[in-house]
Image 1 (cartoon, one colour):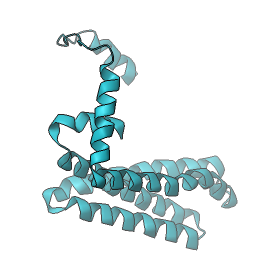
Image 2: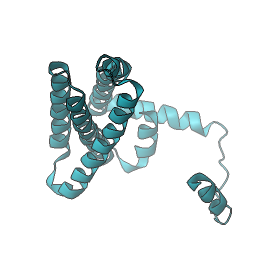
Image 3: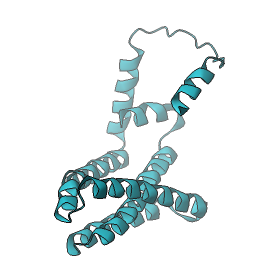
Length: 171
């Protein structure tokens, strides 16, 4: 219902006219400018590699979590709880970043995020309890929020404004 309400309200929105682009291949030009800028910054490349490694580490969790729920005799319902509590953890992590504000250095936030995720994986591998898994899914979500949000904030601070959209679009 919410989707239809927003779609209906968009009919009453007046968006400003954007001037037509002089270049037919502006997308490709911007893409190559972004790639060239990425090549020039070693720090941004290291951050991209870190995010790639993070995704490789996290992917097996989402593949094996339904199997883990099946071994705990919880099935699809247990998996649903885990997915919901991960979202709760992400919200809690983002709220904590909001409340900490400028007191939290972005690199410290990234370190805390990695620490939380490492603790999560260690804890999930040690104990074989459904309720413990639910608790750890909240912690997992908090770690993801701390890591991803602080990396994006850090990138926005170090990338020059004139190429920010191009580089983040490439990433």
